[in-house]
Amino acid sequence: MQELKPIYDITPETLIEYEGKIASIIWFAGCPLRCIYCQNSDMVGGEGVITEKEALEFLSSRKGWIEGMVLSGGECCMYDGLPSFCEKLKNMGLAIKVDTSGIRPKMALELAKNGLIDTIALDFKAQKDMFETITGANAFNLFERTLKGLLSIDFDFSVRTTVYPEYIDESMLSKMATELSLAGYDGVYTIQKAQTHNPTTFAGLPTSRKEFAISKIESNIPLSFSGF
Ligand code: SF4
Image (spheres, rainbow, N blue to C red):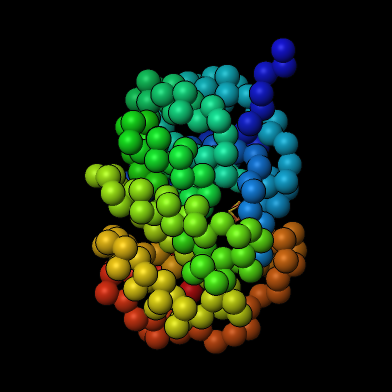
């Protein structure tokens, strides 16, 4: 039987995607969402080209240098083999961060509860009434289940939102920060500007021309900003 190829690409080394660690990034192919600002449309709609075995062999060759792994995509949580893959990475002594939209709560929570990963960066795409506009899927309830599930256990995670100001403005972000705070989240909420110069974004978005002032965002949880 032909081995599965769930992985689209590997970034051998990053110093910025896993805070405090030298890490590699594994980009999983496929994602059920179609975010308007997504720049990874080839990866999201495409097939993987790398097997687990090939990825592990590559990472073994970097043993002693890499401290952490970022599992991203696409949506890595859609890969059914993720728990056993994480176990293998853990056996190599690697810390693991998962990037997810929270679209598959069962998987994210299984990984977190069973100690198979160390942290999650959870994308808060939009509030309920805007979620489908931003992602193309009526799936806010799945994100919410992941958020609430993570808050109900003792697990380190962070939340972030990508902003294209024509769709998500300062007042919406203030409401999103309030929603997080009311749910019990008190960690850092990262707000990052969508990079839309790539013509392959799903919605073909032009560079935003709308004025956007981070000082107008009201929040009682700590904010951090990227790309503004
Ligand atoms: S930006 Fe959206 S569509 Fe693109 S990989 Fe992330 S969740 Fe999927």
